Image 1: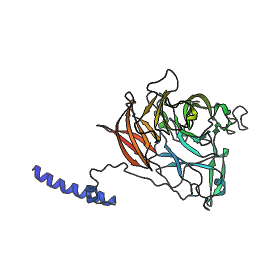
Image 2 (image 1 turned 135 degrees about the vertical axis):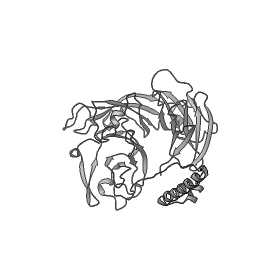
Image 3 (image 1 turned 90 degrees about the horizontal axis):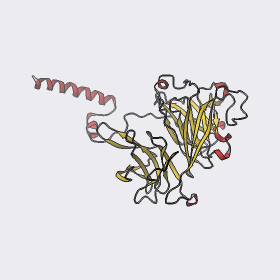
Length: 388
């Protein structure tokens, strides 16, 4: 009886697999050919690249909203060329677009600023605040809940498009409190506050009771700064004389908090020519941070308190390469990944152990811009992703 059942069930399963493969545009033979190969993605979404909003621009940075993974913020670079499809109003501005990957035909919001964005992020507990760092050392913030009346509509490609200017820009902050070099990394500081309430509300209409959160930035000269993002109680439609970076009618501002200058123990002086390239805060201990450099050294520092040990991680043979990305293990913060540039466009991803500062594994990949540490049920796996 068991043999007859297996024979009949096997025929049904084979038919279902053939139908499923046909719907997916592949065959069972293709499925067998892929057996044993690692699949990094089961779905992809193509965003319009010929739209007048982004034509001639390349993506510089991308980030998903932590509470709403379908929302993707892309920061575009300057115009590589000046195609005729690009409207005049966008020729002298830089652009960021908020996309919904479930409906990628057009962006949900179009954000503009004066300087080229280098990195971007969301408020950690709601998707209604977007931030970007720029090459001139400033931070731009957009409150996506603002009414359209605070911004201007422009005619683009036969229609109208609302272009949102920053709600707040640190260009209005005193020069002594601002970055003086291009910002290479930016991320929010982890908080113990849960996000269940934020995730249950509409992603672009969330309100908070004047909640604040911290933001960390790192520039190319190794200057690490923390900022506080806070909502003001009342907006002033005529602007503020105290907060010069605040848009008239805006309700969110950024205030500087602290500054730490990172230095390599081997070359502690700024004139040594070392540039910092990336940043990552420890998820379980946000006062600890790692910063990659252009000479292959990973700096280990703290935002406050006593000095940490070791002060740096140096991989043998990495003196002439740059660290381009870092990521901590989500559950075991003593492990982290580091991506190094090698000859040409190749990178080497290394799994390091903090306490012993040793390499536990490495592999090669092509043209990577970021690394992620993925955790499977039975083991820890290294993952890497790139932007093109």
